[in-house]
Length: 296
Ligand SMILES: Nc1ncnc2c1ncn2[C@@H]1O[C@H](COP(=O)(O)OP(=O)(O)OP(=O)(O)O)[C@@H](O)[C@H]1O
Ligand SMILES: [Mg+2]
Image 1 (cartoon, rainbow, N blue to C red):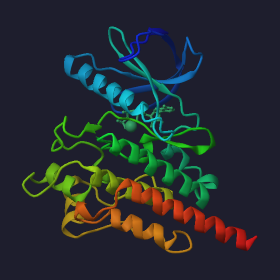
Image 2 (cartoon, rainbow, N blue to C red; image 1 turned 30 degrees about the vertical axis):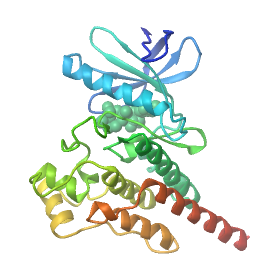
Image 3 (cartoon, helix red, strand yellow; image 1 turned 180 degrees about the vertical axis):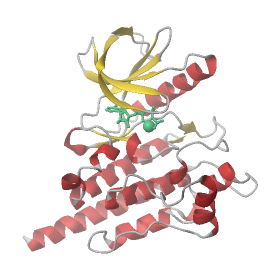
Image 4 (spheres, rainbow, N blue to C red; image 1 turned 135 degrees about the vertical axis):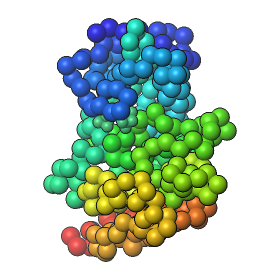
């Protein structure tokens, strides 16, 4: 299937071909397929969204614009934008293809995902991608394994910017995302009252990042699954202060465990920034590789 590229800033137009026989994944809004950028011959991923009313189109355009803006950071840990196209029924976003699928799929492969060096490498990449996003004043708002794509050599790449918000542009009190990954202030605003809760922020992304690290350490598909409905989740996490149990040393080094615990702090202002997470994980990686050299 041939489509025309529309670039927001670049004057040239390209075409791309979507291979409908090669689905890569599906989400709430649409499906993602493998395709080709016909001009550059690069393999791309094409997200086709079936939302052709004006609100749907605006949402898709926003997602594409955020991707275009983030592509200018040149971070290897953020999925690159190629262009958008529209036909009568669909809106397509063409983007960098991640050949190793997404982190949720990788976590099911127990021979790979239990390896500590790989776990740390993925956590570091996501923290670095988040650092670049936050530097651009963009919040992801839906950090979870299904939204982290894996490239060659397992390089993690943050993707799915469908719920992302630009600080100072979007209303940060409109809570969206995956409730299991919500920070206490988002749970309160979303399921109780904005009077008691808080806004989407870098700190709420960091809370979700902490839960993502927990999923990686424990090969879990999702955190907080013991709560069966939003009310239980709200009571558990906010009123009772429930947090998932972080594995002990040597499975999870103490420095990493402290970082995750800090990212789960009730008060958002005490949670670490993404740059702090990058520093701590880099330190842990150095110490771990030193320890394994000693053993050899
Ligand atoms: N660039 C890519 N390269 C390879 N696979 C991808 C890529 N983008 C998405 N996928 C696959 O498609 C799935 C859905 O993509 P994405 O999360 O962007 O869609 P969505 O419809 O917004 O999903 P959600 O329900 O999370 O909102 C991903 O979990 C992943 O498995
Ligand atoms: Mg998704």
